[in-house]
Image (tube, rainbow over the protein chains, first blue to last red):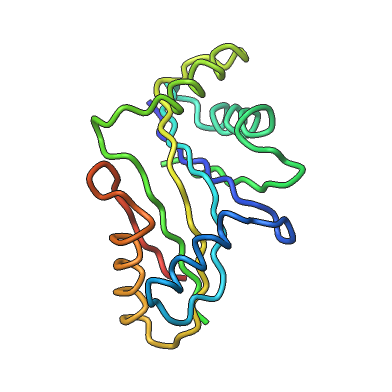
Amino acid sequence: MIKARVTVTLKNGVLDPQGKAIEHALDGLGFAGVGSVRQGKVFDIEIDSADRARTEADLKAMCDRLLANTVIENYTVAID
Amino acid sequence: MIKARVTVTLKNGVLDPQGKAIEHALDGLGFAGVGSVRQGKVFDIEIDSADRARTEADLKAMCDRLLANTVIENYTVAID
C-alpha cells in the first residue's frame, strides 16, 4: 500500500477569483498584511502496489489525464 | 514577506463523495489498484510580516475562522 499526496495549483498568471474572494474576506475579518491568496486542490490517494517507480509514473498519468488541467494548473506528486 | 501553505483535509470518517467519484473515474480510465481518494484544499498565502510566530498564530486563526470547517476538517499550516 503506497500513500501519495497530489497537489494541484494554478499556474502563475492564471486568475484566481476564489483566492481573491478569500483575500478580501480575511481582510474583512481584520487580518492585516494578507498579500495574496491562491487556492488549489489536494488529493490523498492510496494505491495497492509495492512498485514505487511504477506508482509514481501512474500518479503522473492520473494528473495529466484527470486530476489537473495542465493548460492552467501545475501539479506535484509526493509519495510517503 | 512570509509564504505559507495551508492544507485543509476532511477528517477520517467524514464521507467524501467527490473523492469517491474521482476513485471511480480513475478506475474507469484503467488505473489499477486505486484504493481510496480523499480530496482536500490548499491555500498558498503571502503575508507582509517579519514575525513568524505571530504569523503562524494568525494563520491558525484564519483556519479556525474562515478557511476550515473544524467540525469536519483538519488543517495544517506550513511556513516556508
